[in-house]
Image (tube, rainbow, N blue to C red):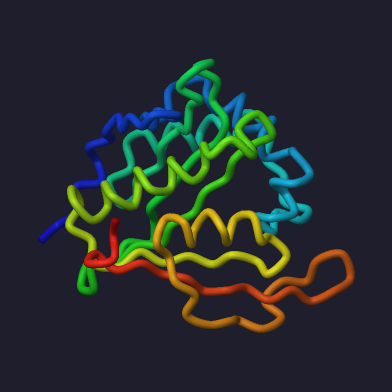
Length: 182
């Protein structure tokens, strides 16, 4: 069965709305990805994007048929606070990678947890995925707690996966299977 990534849904929770990216969102994402905490926890390092490049990237994601990128909006304020993504589609194994980033305006209020749950549920119930996996760096326990609350289970460790600030950092591989989705 072919997964329908070209159809970009709007998913509503109690705290967040997930919606397709729109023109102009790249400027907000540009500010979010420059946040030191976002850069650290995503392994961003020295990678930088200029405004035009981000506009092109997000314009492409609006129409991409091999991945699903959704903007995370705070339902109360309407503020764009981050993104959630299903990518690296493996058709044969009905599997995708999951990644997210939440900027300073969306932290510590359960928005990332709800956004993760909404997209994972959509992946299993609508896209017919069997497995969703991710990596989380060992120095990011907050993200790991979010993933565990959403039902992800640690599978193993990629030792010394990231060189960061003069030290090696492990990456924990986690996944959730369709029958484990709450």
